[in-house]
Amino acid sequence: MSDMAVVLATTNANKVAEFERLRARMLGHGIGAWRSLAELGAVLDVDECGESLAANALLKARAAAAATGMPALADDTGLFVDALQGAPGVRSARYAGPAATAASNRQRLLAELERVLGPGAPDEARPATAVFRCHLTWVDADGAVIAESEGCCRGRIVTAARGGGGFGYDTLFELPEHHCTLAELSPLAVDLLGHRGRAFYRLART
Image (cartoon, rainbow, N blue to C red; front, side):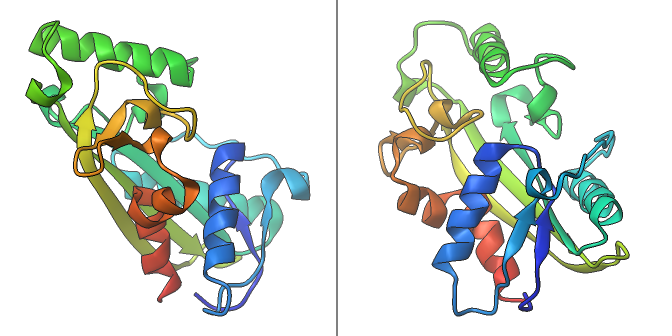
């Protein structure tokens, strides 16, 4: 990643904070400063109609570049649960419908897993394995792709939310080897072990 100003193609304040934390950890590695859409007064109106994380990340990155005249970095992230044949997947942000909230998405996820796996089994006995995937796309001011990367984090879905950190599905996504959900980990641990951090570090090396 070259030393240039980049706009983050997201209106999610939690993602802005996480990316800023990741950028700060990588200072000295050629990463330039970036701006948020809110800071620039820009509006991102994108129909995330792509059939893959990569397609949606590209749509958002190009929309942000067009709105600001700046290079843009976009991510699209999905939770893929094995017992649900990969759902919610690319529709993770809208799993509970067009007006979904993080809480309603989590509620639907737990309901679907209970329907498929049955109630009552302890977390360690449930075959609720899953993977978080994050696809990052970096485009220039004209929308041409400069670089892409993907990061993955494997774990399982627990039966009840745990932890006060993170956002989205983080309170339900446990890393079994650490006996913690993403929401129970420190910010440093999330940056090192999480899907978004892994994708970012790969992109930063380009």
